[in-house]
Image 1 (cartoon, one colour):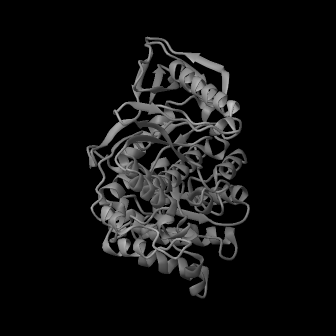
Image 2 (cartoon, one colour):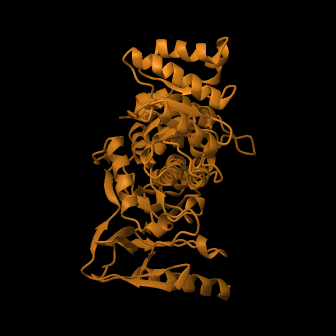
Length: 492
């Protein structure tokens, strides 16, 4: 599957920030374009004040890399850019260099659908500086949003306690691509289907839908509207019952359901889209059961999210299917994941790796040096912690991890613990080497990963904090670099 290239037939090379291209030009001018470097993408805090995130978007990113090129219209546009002196911003030689540019980077990434945590590199890019720099913006654009929505979907689906959740967000999403990528990410996070037909086609997601209030309002009576719909689509009858009077609408749905049954079909259920959903669902359930429609489900929509669903369940709502729109596909209360992309090592003239670190007055923004990998430890209870370590150093069989933001928080893993390295090779020398799994398999991985997390980490409020830290050797390397840089600044 190539979702980006199916949607966008032209080059996406200019889907970037200008400073990426100006830095690329600077590397070219300085003779550093081919100097090898390592960058990592990561996020600093869990979205939605939760206990985890579900990484998503890798397939999109790989498609972007595979299709990357500057076409002639891109190059013509860049050649027209001016500096503040009115002269061209870029030399003709640089424009010609971009014309022939092909990616030769190596990419290692955590597979989509994996539970991930703050500070862990989701993607590691190794290659020429100029290529690594040009990758930053599209990588963050793709992975940040899809990870955010996959995580939101996972939270909503956990709140639904195994009941189906359907993405209803197309009309409220942030544009066309926002709707499509949100539908994809929502499916990864656990949703069972989408109302978005194009997303269904592109990603092979089950599509679901019934009728709107306008259908009912088109006819003189609600009963007539339901009868017409049942006649047109007898195998897709979920009746929206709240256009005028909800409980009266349930009675009309039951009446039409009986007619359907006489014709050899079954009413799937009813949909509630307004009002007191807890009360109305309880009353509707009684009415449906009394009329012999025990298997007819009640679907609810109307500004739902994980918190509203949890509240409705606590009130005894008898809702069986949840249609979630705005607060799913937009991220609701959190507009962005806040993922970043940081340089961590550069090769010198002799080909030796030199670690790099960014300092900040904010502890959370001090970066981590080295060529990083994430090792996940587990036992019979599930996942028990992750160690971020440097591939150029040996990791002990029983490593100790230290939280860089709180060095008192430490954990040592047993040498007998099961473990796996999460970042896997996906691109080598610019060519995809990864067997991209079908989206349904990614969704299965997401659900399995959540099953391996302690219940306390999946709570909506005040979740437990999953143990993640720097392996002791990397922690000490980082601390030494910080001290050296601070000492140098003080001497000045």
